[in-house]
Length: 34
Image (cartoon, rainbow, N blue to C red):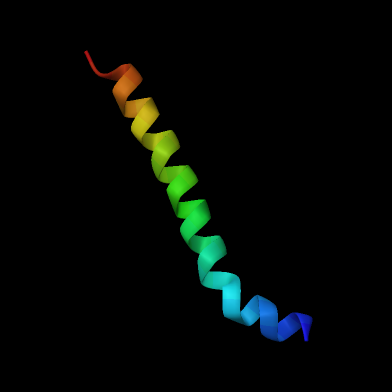
C-alpha cells in the first residue's frame, strides 16, 4: 500500500521541492540585485 501512496503523491513532493528551490533562488537574486 505504501508504494501506491508514494506513487500517487510523488509529484506533490516535486512541486514542494521546486517551490522551495525557486523561492531560495528568488531571494538570492533579490538580495544580490542592486
